[in-house]
Length: 60
Image 1 (cartoon, rainbow, N blue to C red):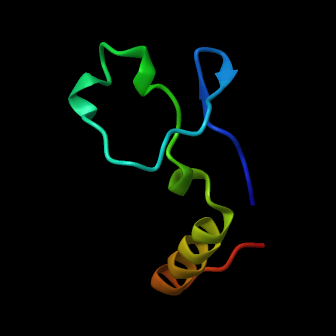
Image 2: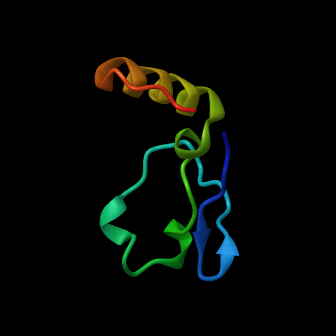
């Protein structure tokens, strides 16, 4: 499992894990990027497993 988050035709940088004022996201370029939890492979694996359990389906 894996992947990247792209923004403005580039792979987005990881954002700081500290709290931020997201109301500035639309106007402040400093808010660009992706939060680390959004590209965490362990979290993705847990979500995939949970999805299989909830739907009763398994990936090929």
